[in-house]
Image 1 (cartoon, helix red, strand yellow):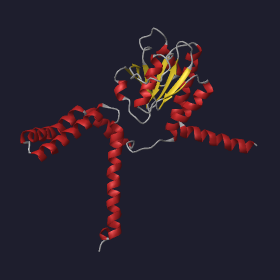
Image 2 (tube, helix red, strand yellow):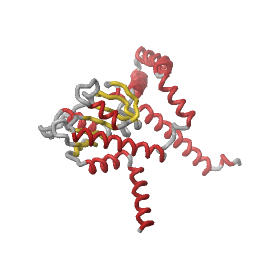
Image 3 (cartoon, one colour):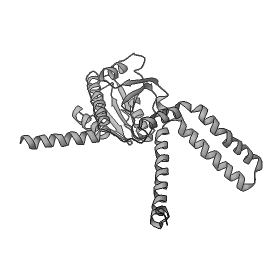
Image 4 (cartoon, helix red, strand yellow):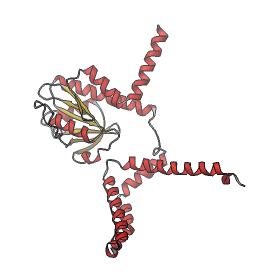
Length: 273
């Protein structure tokens, strides 16, 4: 009896096989989340469902049409989504497809947070209205497409210049993806909650609206009062001081870096008495 034929080993190999397949599927879903590809995936599932239903009910013509859609649909997918497939293969070649967050990435997110804080502090003092939404797990690709693509490094100066009144990009939201400014002048969905205070304007409603449909963290600077607010998970945190704002933003967007920094501070405190 070979090693693979042992009952326990055979069982473990099957479990590992299933776990690997599910992990690959999960990573692929994470890659296409928030893009047009996710809508395509829903369409594919619908076609397959119609195919099984038509086969069960004996609807031969509909079944033939669904078969043709499945056969030629995969070829069309390869042609239409050639850039996305090429990007995925490039990431796989670089070993980034299954990579997790690294120390450098955490530090980059901490620098991004500090850039947002500095820009927000500047705009709040001068009552420059701003709306900045930072993507987390839930993709925001559909909302990015409503604005002007930038793909720029996050810096306080650029954020401030975007929201200067009467400039082409100031009206709308800035969306940050993967530590970069993906787009500006984006349209976000307005919240329809009846519990929102009447004194809050369109920016606050948009910030609450995007927090209700995604897990993003959104920053609002009031043009009337200069007050700083943050929305996440359908909740609004109003009139934050800069220190409170920095603490909240760091805890939400760079918790690992914050923990590491706190650990270093505690170690230094113990070392120096």
